[in-house]
Image (cartoon, rainbow, N blue to C red):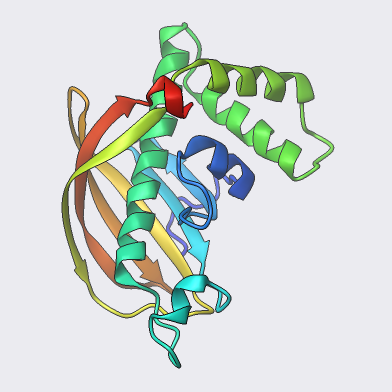
Length: 202
């Protein structure tokens, strides 16, 4: 599904891997498509489901049905990406900068991975240095309430949307949805805590 505010924060898999603690094959997001701060912080992301996925070896043999738990994980990782983008925007604002600067710097970082001639290498190097120096965030799940509406099959593009609906201290609550070709396949709410990643894991 292409939601109405699509395309303003296109980030490919290389940048996604920098922003999330998960690594392949447990990375369930291939790209970020959009972020909007108002009226509620919302992030759109997605994943291309390939028949080459190892998960299909046992789920189910002879019929490539995507495991529902992985759809939940994808929506959770999308929520973690939303949380990370929000933290970067807030850090920029705390330094007296426009929060949109964080978005611009992420876009520039992605241009480098696409070998785009407009890429600013010095800015990307500075952002990477900051990302390594500052303690990354981990999202620890506390509650999952999700309904599955339709199966997902190999060859489909699975689009995720996460919207921040509540925040108290380090606790966050998200409304999440997954769609294929404009049709919802799962939706519900996720909640959890953001915590600093232990030094041993950085």
